[in-house]
Length: 297
Image (cartoon, rainbow, N blue to C red):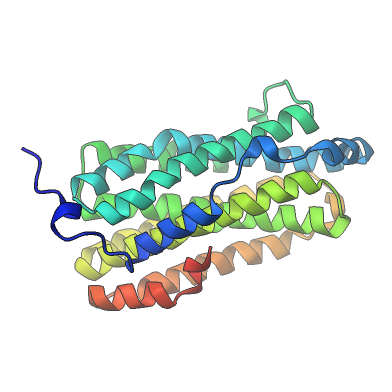
């Protein structure tokens, strides 16, 4: 028998971090990839040299595969939260699949309509990339179909929100913004990247809240989060170095060290935030989430 309906008994906790993020998703997440104008992008693409095209194609392919992977693997996390009766969190999580699917749609439009790509792009996906997106990510999220424990939830969120989104995607956005803004090219792709980054900043904010809640309630969770993030950060750094290793010189005058440092700064920022949750009360976790700039996505 279904338990009593929470929203008929006590309503919704509208000031909770997940509900505040839900409000932001309703305001800022309703953008349509099909409405982004890519005509200038098509012209700009034709003016790039082969190496510049290849780098942008590589970055776009990495995002395309990553967004598809998350879209395919995310559902078990939503189901676990629903089983626990956390209605505010589930309501916000319903926006995740919608947004990740839109990201798949957007990056494929760029590949089809700007780059004119019809060939297989999987050669761009290196061993470090597949270690995260083809192995660690699906394993951690699909494990939730049979293991609903806080430890399993923490491993999934650390993999998805902290490494995939919080390190790799954030570093990728930084690369796109650096190239496209500096060179004043491809405004349609830049607009879509900006929307995608805004969506995923909300995802990261929820991941920080979820992990902080789990850590505060069970000290054993911290060891799993620490181990997962530390292990996967090695492969994540490898994804970045792999992307630059094919070019000499690197197109657009990019500096590999800048992006490695940026990735590590993203990792350290999230790691420090999660470490604060150890030994804290749930009330304090909520206060930290409310005050954090991470919820400004």
